[in-house]
Image (tube, rainbow, N blue to C red; front, side):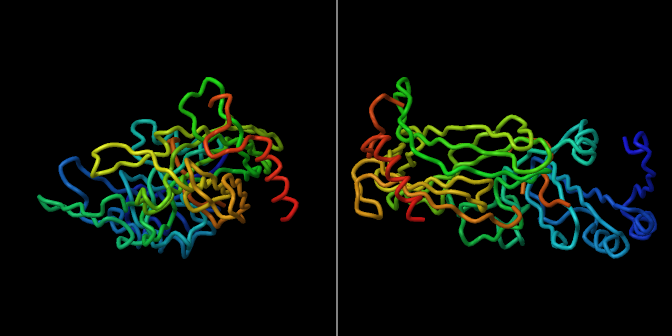
Length: 344
């Protein structure tokens, strides 16, 4: 594809450092493809990439004008060089279309992938791999982004594209008439604020009341828009059901719907939250002392976040007609929102 566009290509098709340095020394952009593999019978012995490629990347980085690293992996890997390179993208087991997928992203097709896992900063920030015959799993639900003590190199749900998005403040609206199981309904919209058409992926993480014993807000839904042209917007809705507000109770051996104060976190990854909404399910008194509290917090744009769904993830780049439970009606919520925005 590069040659068809008149781009001169210099290549090194091994993991030999000297050969790689020679190929990268006189090019505008060095693209380094790295990988690790795994089998179904055992874990990997560690989370490093194969072939001592960390050293190869460092050597190429020193001579290349710009360097982009493409990672192929079956799961989490560590990238100690991530802050020293100009771009990083990851693909999980792309199969026979791997090459075409990489070419699409590199040559301008806007990526929209999001990470289905957290990529850890170090091996200490995840469940350590172990290729022994017996591997204990004692972490319970405190895995990946649900473990607040783990540091992410790239957080769960992260993924970049060739544009940026603006997120409108969300509001509560009444559940649809035919939505019998709706407990809470959120409406908002997202706008392409850049110069390249691309889809947005808005993610909802739900923070439970203490009785649920959750270690962090957990993903409950996401919406992927159509490819938005620059300046265009798309409205989206999240209708949370009774099951969405439930947790698994070991003592009762079943799902239990939690009651109390919830916080809906909306953003572009588990670490890049744009807005928060606080609401009640059942009797409770959230901050402010009212039975109904719709509180909007506009969160500043987060730092660079990584790749839900698409084949390649770019990590770094150049209800019913009645009001929902614990609600005094959409009009009250609208007035409360207007007051909060005016005060802000």
